[in-house]
Image (cartoon, rainbow, N blue to C red; front, side):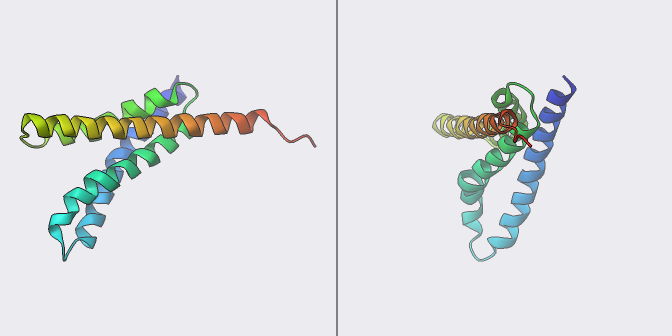
Length: 126
């Protein structure tokens, strides 16, 4: 149980710190084109953070890594929905993007967990 909590807390911290680091990176990179930064953050950076969090949770989790990864991505992705006033169509699109990021993180965690488990079962005999 302790390792599951550690995986969840690590996932939450990595998603929040990844968003902060990504925001700083976008601020530095998008000097000439400031209107491009929100699109890069939403469509490129957020899925990369989800992959990174999914990989980390998959390494740390003992069971149910997909659920833990999706759950640890919820706080940082909920900010996207609550941050600004959106029309109904834009809100549906943002919910779709959040669901895609949660699925990316869950799939990365499951895949990493299975690969790690498979490597642990095939131990070299010496």
